[in-house]
Length: 309
Image (tube, rainbow, N blue to C red):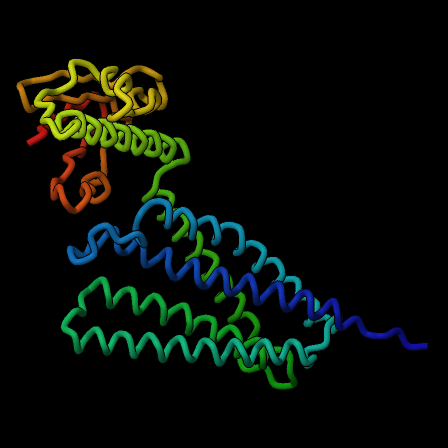
């Protein structure tokens, strides 16, 4: 009795392969564009979240996890197809290949339309062109891969299989290069941890500044008219309450330095572990204030001279 063919196994392999291919393509596309955006910044996109560390790390993690899975599954499937351990013309394989071809072609068309619209709006620059080329290059590579896969295991292969081996290794080297570039851009995990602590310090200094302005301002419709003598005074007054945690360094637990300079100005000091990114450390206060918080800093002890007027 002939053993029945395991179509469920084929479906599992192909679905996992194409799912990880989708993750790899999206992550590689946006990660490369984000890295290009850091090298070639656009003044019209200051503070764009697509280029911050968290976004880059997210795409980097997706690429590092999904690509080896895709690589191994594809290698295993190609090996099984070459040995006739898998049927090349099963419905699930052909459907997934043709669906992928349609999606890739639509992506190329959409990217060309977007590029043309950007050109008509007069906003085409080197960064936009490189970003479009990245998307098109990835889409064309997938298109070639899928077309080769469609023809490779038939009676008349489209290209010698040795060509595809070269293509596979070039893709591996390219992905590895982007991963190295991303690590060089965002730094090591310890560097990222230091940045997180510095962001917390900046947020706590900002909270102190708001509390000081409230303290100086109206109280029961009477102008308070003075700065607090010490930060503990903010904590003790329930109307201008600020929790104890906001008054101390998140890592060392030491209090931030505060010193009144005049009737309306004062100084806040903190010790930072890294230099700040200019785009991320000058957020605005609520609209009614219109002030810019000058919390740009270098690594080490930094003092900020602030005013309530």
